[in-house]
Length: 174
Image 1 (cartoon, rainbow, N blue to C red):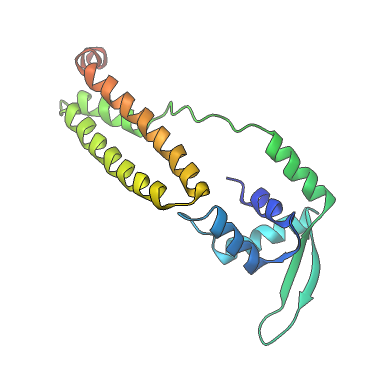
Image 2 (cartoon, rainbow, N blue to C red):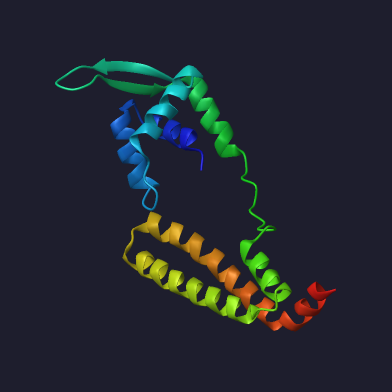
């Protein structure tokens, strides 16, 4: 995820302080990985330097100064370009799990155990996500569906690999 683009997009609804941006980000996107304040302010500093935001006002009070940021026309254009650019699909061609299975076979360990252990972990994770999805709002349901679909694909791969372990063992032994 591009944090800079996400913060820019949040600014399109109107100027905000760094604290407000962090809170909005965490509420909408950071359930599992909230932003650190330092990350917000370093990102805003970079966006300011690049002309994508401007300081809309500075408030002084009992504490440190609070800058209010606003998106510039260049920032709006940058968000539009980012939203229109497709993400590269993750092909998982360098899967750690695949590496573990092959290494287990190469070292004469039980690759089926590796697959069984991973299957159990995937199922555990799917139960947690399913419970979260059931209790969550629509946004949470959608992000859980995304993760669940990926885990389901992994489970299919685990089953396929388990069915082909003998052939894979022969192939890697050559």
